[in-house]
Length: 316
Image (tube, rainbow, N blue to C red):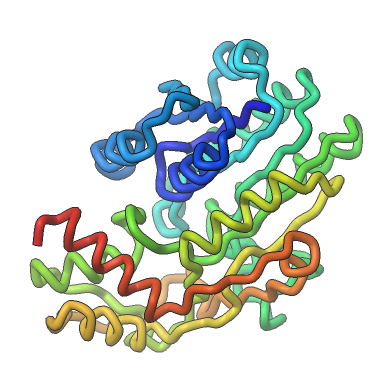
């Protein structure tokens, strides 16, 4: 079998690749190493997972020549489609770009996967598709038809298009809605690493609603376990929440990192933008039932692991 991981040089993708390689699989990483954040981090991820069974392709999921050729030449049987233009707030004024990558790029992959009849296609989505829903915790039966920004809107569009490929071509496609993934080698634009950097350099961090918002932080190892389980279980077409199921108050999140670092983090209160809901809260009962998902890492433990990695990475 041959596993294609799009965005495989990124945070989640590199960890998924590492676990697949460790169990003896052949892995093809497709990543364009863009400069949304420092490409050096992505190259460091690839260096971390170097293996005889790893093939790395520098390319774009929108490339209509490269992608189908890659599927054919590499004999792709399984896909973990994790590449995306990410970040809710960054999407506010860049809708065309997010459509091109998250929608058109996903369709390009689905076309190629259909043509070679892959065994399983796993697509990363986001808990942000639920928007400011009154249904708490977030459950997959919610219509999720009121996205608050272009990022979740394009992810929801890709989910719906994926269903048409399942319906018309009998493809096995599992949509995983990620919830606030964090951990070692995490994205520098996300709150954990922003706070850790601020603990070191004194950058003032804005806290929406003065830190009185909740996020369902999910440790990278738990998320990877869910992705691998989805790759191993063709289920027809399913949308599955993949999150810890235990929201944390942002102010408490800051306090944990201050305690770990032994430093005070300067913050300022800021109004929550209209792109961001007051809470993310995953009902993960479907993931437990269908994937055997059982998140193990509590936020205090996960942040401690992340802080240890951060110190080593920064040479502190």
